[in-house]
Amino acid sequence: MDDEKEKLYQTGKFDFRTSTPMIAPLIILIILNMASFMLGLVRAIATGDWDKMLVQVVLSFYILIMSLPIMEGMTIRKDKGRVPSSITGLSFVVAMAFLTVGSIVLMD
Image 1 (cartoon, rainbow, N blue to C red):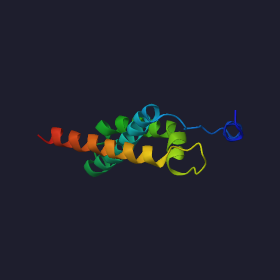
Image 2 (cartoon, rainbow, N blue to C red):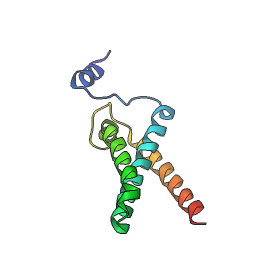
Image 3 (cartoon, rainbow, N blue to C red):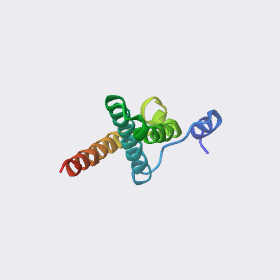
Image 4 (cartoon, rainbow, N blue to C red):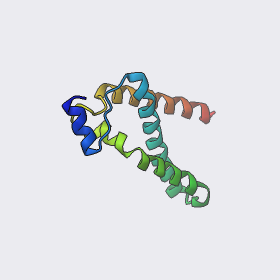
């Protein structure tokens, strides 16, 4: 185990240096969940329909809280164990494509 991995282990941080097919789907799901939470919250506030939307918003918020270490690895961390920017960017593009296709399909 090299010094960098040992340092991350001692500080309790995850090491995201893995292959793209392993980490990209996870990042895509987190980005989709962030968008779902934000849009769900806006819709619940705008319509005032909290009795239907409350469980969905709370569930999305809970999943976001559980994803905090990964979001930290995507945005805040600058060490070698962070999520590479290329994977974050690729995942963002794929997540936006999913949201676009989903909105087009649901509009019809």
